[in-house]
Amino acid sequence: MRAVLPACKEQGIKIITNMGAANPHAAAKEVVAIARELNIGVLKVGIVSGDDVLPQLLSGDFSVMETGEPISSIEHDIISANAYLGSDPIVEALSLGVDVVITGRVSDPALFLAPLMYEFGWSSSDWKKLGQGILAGHLLECAAQVTGGYFADPGYRDVPDLENLGFPIAEVSENGEIVITKVDGSGGYVNTATCSAQLLYEIEDPSQYLQPDVVADFSQVTFTEIAKDRVKAENASGSSRPELIKVTIGKRDGFIGDGQISYAGLGALARGQLALDVLQKRIKSSGIEFLEIRYELIGVNAIHGESLSYGHDPYEVRVRVAARSKAQKDVELLVNEVEAMYLNGPSGGGGATKSIREVISAQSVLIPRHLIKTSVSIVEL
Amino acid sequence: MLLREIAHSRTGDKGNRSTISVIVYDIKDFSRIEASVTTERVKMLYKDLVKGEVERFVIPQLGALNFVLHDALGGGVTKSLALDAHGKSLSSAILSLEIE
Image (cartoon, rainbow over all chains, first blue to last red; front, side, top):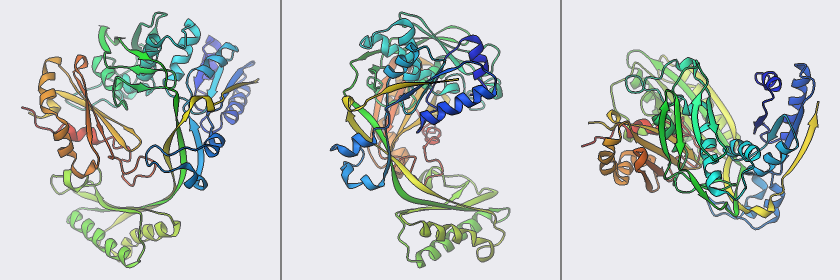
């Protein structure tokens, strides 16, 4: 906010953000405080609320999508429930003449669709245009992932000036035409390959991209390079918005402990493997039954697992043991065992680290749209 | 020839599912990958990393295949023990597939 607020205010550019996260009201206060500090003068901030649906969830009869468990059976562990809001409340905030819109949970593309609907007066049932608007939003929502970020592979895809990547811009016209481009003079590039990679990013069936505003259809989308770093995106469409809205619930789900230590030089792999063997025996003798545990060597098999990994002995390896348990003391024991590889393990281990975190696992629930009551409030400087 | 020579790939995550796109650089290579990068081969490639089924969506005008790998992320990014809990690096493995 510090980086963009002065320039945006000066140019009359509105800021729409979901940085309100779990508490958009507190975020709005913070924005006003920053504006005051930066001598912005006058600022009107719109707050979108209503994504927090914990009370509705707990008083209804719903189940977790992934497991089928009824909410009533896990309600004591649920700490949050946030529905993916769509464009409507953001459009409402814009119509109140705010400079900044702050939301909690909204679908990412809605952050981009809303100003299009507001500016062009698109109807909330013009499915074809909403489909194109969602396309623009989806291409922009991961920032530089469409301008050459997360794309470079030396010798195959050499992205120019990666250190100076430009953020994307969508030029959208009233009839829904889209051109994706980026800031002049910035690094990276925009071409059909970067656009296609971003189009399919985190999409499952491209003909049914479920959004709170529309079921977007990307299956016929085409990209055309009309000039350097300018790509036309066409042929998205859509059909009526879903009646059920996705809610992400946060659930207390035990603790994860993660202990690591490195071995380097001659025999590094053998010593790392010996450390894992010793740890496995010691942890077994503790009698603790972890919900899940993994023993691995970073640099050898930690990322793709034993069955996919191959290659030569590395110069250095890093032992990693990670486990999950309902009880914090269990994972404390685990990470301390890894640290004990210093004095009580193979020779030459170094750089041991240990970390413990409480797990708040995310799961999904579908609830009927009519249970979600959004509202917009305003704070001003 | 390795798939890496003619295509690029990006991985995303949705809960406990991994989505992996495979996109050819040159549209005339598309029929080769469409014929050869099948759900069966993808399932075999990832072995025990993917516990559920593999679905494939075909987007011919973009020269793209989009795979959805079910039960592939250790319960999802928030509770997975994996170092790469999002499974972001899975895309690099698919590019090692041998193409006719």
